[in-house]
Image (cartoon, rainbow, N blue to C red):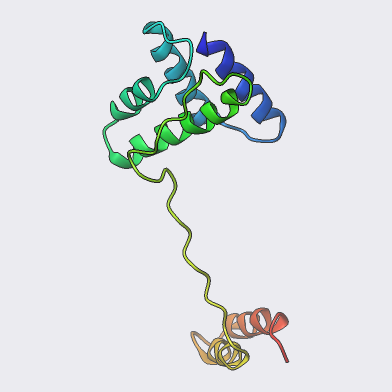
Length: 136
């Protein structure tokens, strides 16, 4: 039964510090969905069918991503579990590439903070805050 496998997976992940509140609820729903269809292992067909029942493409991708991670975990012990392809796309948005400021740009930010805004302590606070980590 997949319900037992999901419970073991969630227990291991939670023991390592992950809360997995909504993820745990979704994986439990997936296990019940698969158990109702008498599926004892993860297959691409059942995973895509379950994830595809969601309204939005992003939610489908998120659901399928959860099942993919579960399948990878379970496949380490039982190779009957199939790792589904990510047919709905990435389940997480990619992070933007950080922009590193040059020393001159940092000095310009500090100068702008010192003169911008109302004449309050805010000017001194922001210019001090930004200048604490700036290169000399």
